[in-house]
Image (cartoon, rainbow, N blue to C red; front, top):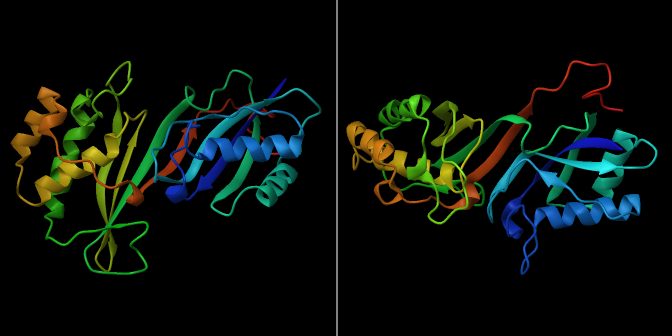
Length: 256
């Protein structure tokens, strides 16, 4: 058996999220269909996480197993992109050790959330238009609290099936992209369901001076979802990257 790690990007607008759904199309279903059609065998893929409906990915990681002759990675990418719909793209593929798992072996994930502060018809599908002033220096001051926090229960969707609400955030920062455009960058070892959108909504409460830094500390301390800000719309959220510590052997992680 050979295990492959495949990186893809997708526009999530038309999908009910990454994971296969009983009553809606998903990115996972489209990818499995394309791989199975190309390889002429039923292929199951396992993703690094589950993006919600309408959320996009610039670099999502998945793994799958193959029990036949080794695949040519570049040729596989080429053929996949001929089959996949236009809103899903295969980026790269590497052979990895058989114990590597796209979800459980990932060491970090990065999300970006985009907003713009003036009307722009060309940004509306992938960025949130904000019609009120925001105090970005104060929002960045509040975001630093996430770097010393372990429990993010306050930002977890009610009723989610998370076994733990513990996460290690290594980066949380608002970045000025110029011309009234901003993005929030956050990196962690794992994320809870709806966590990033809830974090952004809470930071925007701080930016509107509706929540103080001390109140933000209380939100983190109490762990109640009701105390945090609203969940922001999905269309402005991107899974930006998933990273792994691949073994430094000649074959592991080598694109063929």
